[in-house]
Length: 150
Image 1: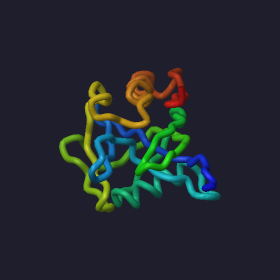
Image 2: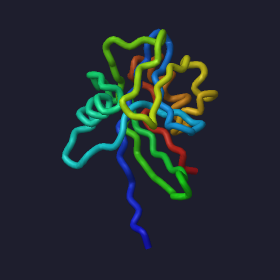
Image 3: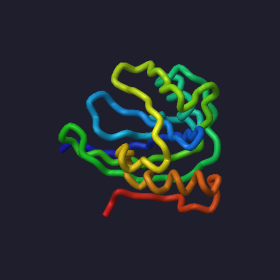
Image 4: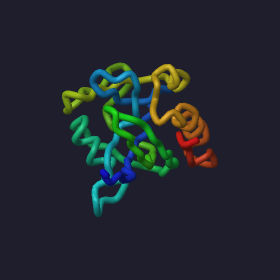
C-alpha cells in the first residue's frame, strides 16, 4: 500500500487594482494562487519568496499570514491532501495591465478581478470567498480557516 502524506503548500495573495494574480497549469481548467511546496527546514515566508523566483524570476515580499485552507482533490487519478498556508504577497513591478511571464513552461499567470474568482475556478474553492474578505479587512479579523473537507 502506498503511503500517503499531507503536503504543506505556501500561497500568496497578490492584489493590485482590485485584481488577484493567479496561476494555471497547462491544460487545466482551474486556477490557483502563486506559491508551492514548503521544503524541510524552510520557513513558510522563505518558501513563498523562493517559489516566486522559481516561477516568475521575480523578487517578492511575503507579508501578513492571512489564513490556512485544507484541501483534498484527485489529480491524474491519485488522491491528494494539502494544507495551504496563505500570506499577503507584494511583487514589485507587476500590474494587471500585463500577465507576468512564467519561468516554467507548464505554468501561466493571469489577473482575475476579485468579483470573478468563482468563474476563474480558483482552488481550493474556499479561497473564492476568503480572499475578498481578507482583502476587504486588510488581513485582519476575517475567517482564517477554510476547507474542502465535508
